[in-house]
Length: 283
Image (tube, rainbow, N blue to C red):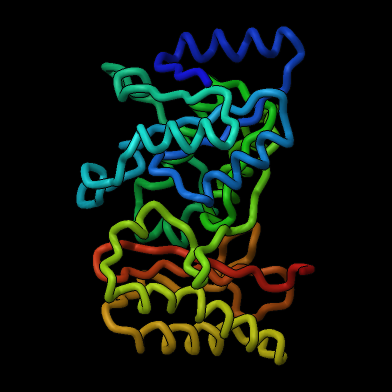
């Protein structure tokens, strides 16, 4: 497994693969890898000749009061896990490589970023789309793999790739959960032992919402109220949002007549956790 730290070296390596007719799969991460990341990487191994992952905590997607400095980091552990799952290359750039002096260019996807995380974290999606566009230009993948836990992010990346005519296939993979149902996240490391039960209110409320849907409930307001009431019964929870949105526009819906996503963002103590469930999908 190679570790590449400069933009030029990464571009040259990827270009050499392409010239030899090799297919590249890419999994962008911010490190502190868990099984959710590893499942994306395993899928990448199936889809291409060379699997590249990036480990880079992107500063432009953090707000001034967010956890950039405290975001968990463990490159040695990430390197070991990546090697074990068959990653061929880790792209591990410094900030000076990604945002050199006098950097002024950003990528913005409009409308679908106006709701959910776009409301509560105003700079988040501009940072995500900017760094992903840069990474796509550097790594030059044929296919990139994202998790559906960050559902709005997946929709935004697909929209950017389509709108900017990027020749990249975007694959979304199901949320990977811990045995008790908690969606895997690097921020789970922030949870205190006595907060675990409250953190499980997210996945359990989604299961409850799915049961309401299966029983015929189609009023979004009714389902949202039930979900909020369920979560708020758990100590230490504070809801950022609980909304049901169209899966393409990310606009709120009043009735669940087609495919729609119930998206949650909830503070449990210090960490802000997200999860979602898509109604109307064939299981």
